[in-house]
Length: 156
Ligand code: FES
Ligand code: FES
Image (cartoon, rainbow, N blue to C red; front, side, top):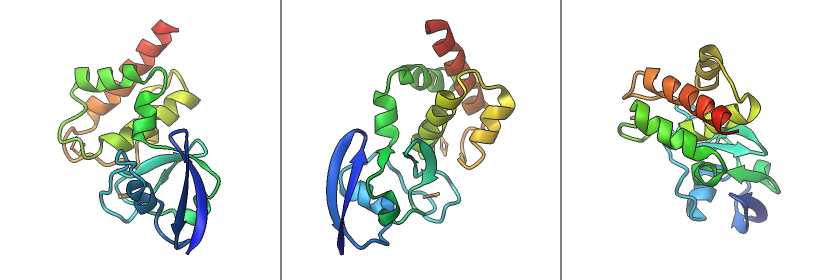
């Protein structure tokens, strides 16, 4: 066991954990329920969080690698300025069905739009390539991210 300091959605937390414990478990045990486990093997993207602004699968990151880092979960993304556009676009386009993939997709799309505010379809498809969705066939999610980008551009 060792002590690890993390900043989770802007809140500093201290945890006593085995350094190899998965960041996914540490975050959920700390109350960050916006992080969702899917495959647990780095294949589905459900557990995506931003680790110092980079999307990572929290199921693959040992907590010692996140020591001192800023972590943003889907809850932090929804609170972030401008994310109403994405949430509303996902609803308008029908990009949310069972919701299992939604937290990871919200985090990945947030990272994309922060880096590239006006992505084309290929850029959105590439960014979301690691986020699996069994329900929507992806087209609705693609359209939602493009719609959110347009809405944010028009609002700025
Ligand atoms: S739960 Fe982490 S990638 Fe699937
Ligand atoms: S909405 Fe069900 S897995 Fe994506």
